[in-house]
Amino acid sequence: MNALLSVDAALSQILTNFQQLGAEQVSLEEAYQRILAEDVISTIALPPFANSSMDGFAVQAADTQTAPRSLHVIGDIPAGTSPQFVVRQGEAARIMTGAPMPAGADAVVPVEATNQNFRQTGDHELPETIEVRQAVKPGDYVRPVGEDVQIGQRVLLAGSSIQPAEIGLMAMLGVSRVPVVRQPRVAILSTGDELIAPDQPLTPGKIRDANGYVLAALVRQNGGIPLRFPPAKDSIEAVRARFEEALAEKPDLILSSAGVSVGVFDVVRTVIEEIGHIDLWRINIRPGKPLAFGQVGGVPFFGLPGNPVSAMVTFEVFVRPTLLKLGNRIDDAPIIQAYLEKPIHSDGRRTYARVKLRRDAGSGRWIASETGTQSSGALSSMVLADGLLTIPEGLTGNSPEALYSVRLLRPVTQGLS
Ligand code: AMP
Ligand code: MG
Image (cartoon, rainbow, N blue to C red; front, side, top):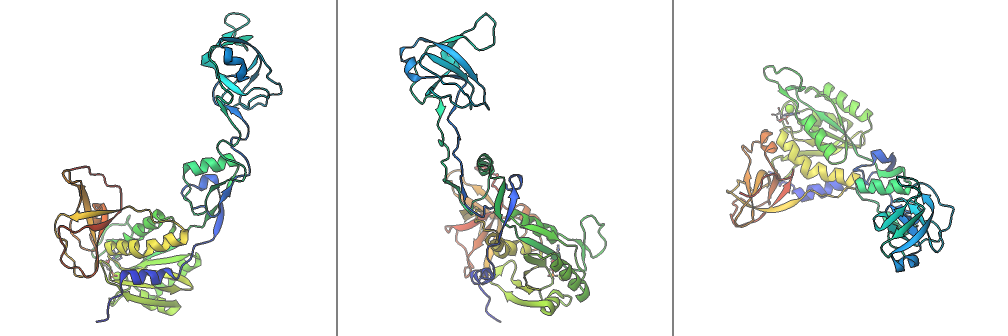
């Protein structure tokens, strides 16, 4: 028997075939969760003008040192206007939050710290005078120019993930077209005479295509754009036609599931060898030993196992890092260290076990236990799993005192037990 290739060796060999995709421009609305392709350097200051942080009166702070002090109100500055007057000694201008400071004034007295004297009772026009009850210092309640961002400041770095705050900052800076890393477009092919669409009635011998949908969701989860094709029959003509349809979409990557093992009807290999080349690897991993990698019509290709759990695990281990590299995304999936509730069987291959996690109330330790049947066709075990626990290659027995890494697949909802 040939030696099995290690997971790490296979992955690093695969990744040498990929580099970060180029950039494209999208609107601000489309930029959420995309990866910034260039630094953003501000061409303006924020705020662009000194403005009031309160509704109140713009004054010369020196006038308020002898509070209570009466000041003559000379004008009104609603937000969105630009005052043309100068506030002199003994004067005040009514100002709204966010409105520009008038020349001459160096502080704002909040409206709560004043009494307003109107020309007549019940008058809601501008007060004639105010009485300032409280002293302010120069700069009080004033947001200076550039307090937030200076002209020429590098405010966002290439490679950042664009979140709501980044979108807001770009909006304020007038960046309405955002340079982002292109999303990988991934063609997804399922093969098998037994496969029917989820909306079709089950007939004897048939099962519904899960992998097409699972892989499309996984592609989306990792920043890609899935292009899902209906299942192809197990004939060379049908599989070839499906690959040609996929190639016509000019994808960055093609994923197929099933049909790469040694089954009599496994025709994917035959087709790929006609229109591309393929390396079929036996990898030291469980589940998911056979993995095909190669090129079809110049497009990189992964042939994943047919069993849905094996397809998911090999996606997580090999395809996900590929998509992250193409999209320049960092791997932010949390990894925690857990103890085993009960020993987990391993045959010495690197094993990815589907586990549920609980936190032991006494010790605070994370405890992992396998979810249901670990059959590589049983998707319910993935639904129940909080994460994938790695048992390193070469270990067959496992000790209750050893810690194992668990890659979380979802937020752990269960509390202390
Ligand atoms: P194969 O690699 O073709 O021998 O398939 C291995 C197993 O995976 C078989 O039990 C298939 O029925 C199953 N399988 C293959 N493709 C899919 C799919 N798209 N959805 C669900 N199960 C599948
Ligand atoms: Mg098959």
